[in-house]
Image 1 (cartoon, helix red, strand yellow):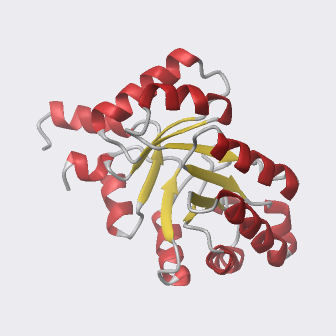
Image 2 (spheres, helix red, strand yellow):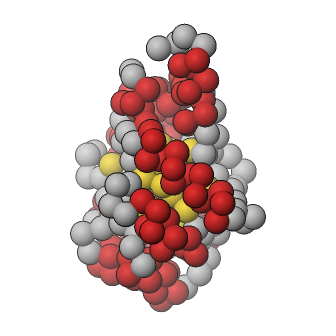
Length: 222
């Protein structure tokens, strides 16, 4: 798999609380130089990122992040505001407590409302797999598909663990092509990226893909 084939599936990510405009400038320039799928940033930087990149690279942002415990109304407002400011993709966090209670209808309704709020823009649903058992993950696969989201996503990168190959395999089985898949959190090697893509992940959320792949290129792995 070529470097560019991998990078075309990478959401080049910076979600740290201490990120500055200078950091976002660097992120956006790297994304444009390497033709990544998007940059994924906190909402306060949407307009700034758009001012740098225009329509060259889509801006992705996060909603209800990272805990997912906000009200549905607040998430819908965040999503609408993000699109108004120029974001083209929204990665939302589900209410994980509701999943632990088995209230999947609440989660499905929330996803549906946010998708309706952003229209044809891309919605990715973060279910935070490290906090869930297998049956909860399966139920959430169905909820994400039924609500009309574009992607199911493994992780925020801010909880106890990130993406696993087993989670993407489970998503592939139980979404049955009803939505795409994003692996995020803890992706540290070129081999990890290739494996997630081979298993069916259409997007990878990582802050380090460009650095990793440029290092591989320098060392003669391509």
